[in-house]
Amino acid sequence: MNIKAIILSTALVLSGSTLFAQQDSDHKYQRPLKDVLMEISKHFNVRLKWTDVIVDGKMLDYADSRIRSYSVEESLNNVLAPFDYKFVKQGDNLYKIKNYEYARRTDEDGVKMIKYLNSLYADSVQWNKRKECLRKEVRERLGIDPLLKARVNAKPVISKERIYSGYTVQNFSLETLPGLYVCGSIYKPLIKGKFPLIICPNGHFLDGRYRKDQQQRMATLARMGAICVDYDLFAWGESMLQFPGEAHRKSAAQVIQALNGISILDFMYNRKDVDKKRIGVNGGSGGGSQTVLLSVLDQRYTALCPVVSLSSHFDGGCPCESGLPVFYSCGGTVAAELAATNAPKPMLIVSDGQDWTSTVPTLEFPYIKRIYDFYGATDKVTNVHLPAEGHDFGPNKRNAVYNFFADAFNLKKQMLDESKVTIEPKENMYSFGDKGEKLPKNAMRSFEELEKLLNTLK
Image (cartoon, rainbow, N blue to C red; front, side):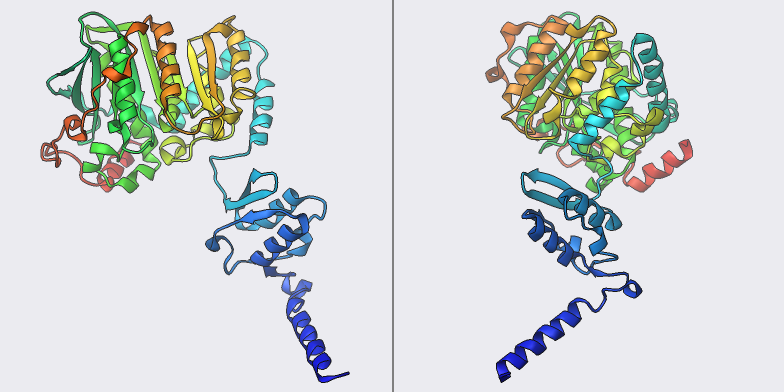
């Protein structure tokens, strides 16, 4: 044997001894997670995506025993479970490795959940019992009633009207709990009369309620004959004068936003220009989640329209949507079932092909339609699905909303013209001044103050 062969042989022995040094039960057959994932990728001829923080320094006990040579997905489940990781299939041969997300499941999980829910009720009698259970437990798990009882009996502060083509806009601020304020805008038809009211909780789209498409939707619905009210998310917009942005990702955001929505409906409901028989709620993304929650909490709504939000396998990725255990109500529920508690009221579900609502036409909508059929009202629930579109509140989604409320509330379709809308600068929409100089003296200035108050109300 020549010297090169000796060196190569020695190298192979050394590498082999390193590779298998820990491969016995004394060392739990431990291997680096990164190496195991690379082996799975090669064996099954698939691509795996991960961030360095997911795999660096991670060691997997009993590594090889977790691999199933016949199934990439079973192998990934076994390998990722000890680290509380999960995989998301993003293509025929592409998988992304992620941290476990309590609010997100797979499409297949949604199919199984809908099948389970359908098995719970076969008629309106059984469904009504389930519905009452859901309404009761959602309130309890959200913890909304103690906050409603502790509200400040304050009138909103409303600005002068700004007059535009066919509509007006006013700013408002409302103190809900002591020192806690919510700000928003009231869009109203320019003519006098009695109008339907649409409460429009905002989602997580960039610039919040100040963005162009939000103003277009509010103003166009007002031009068509509805009073529309939108308002800031907790710790967004003017709420950030009181709380830092990171407070929005506290679980308390979910109940505070529900409190704000109910309180805004309360102060608008008894206005002389509001038709109490026509009360709607409409929002997109996180605003769609609020739309469903508000409709469960408040029976005054007569029509609802969640946009790019409704699902059986995603509860909302922000704590303001899923931070409190409302989805554990009555043995487990999902947004689609909560929305169905509104049957037989008119409802439009807007979905698209590029986010978690892609399954709506084949999964969530048929399920909800079945419940509407308990009341002989399948014509009252509709789905506008946009398979080529993504997660936004674009023109086709807005047009679907306009047409739905035009039919549900007898609005004037001839007034549907977004080109007539004036897009205001953010500063016009502030209640507390350009720099917050008008913020009331009693206003909270930290999340810790709010947290202390909430703890006294539990």
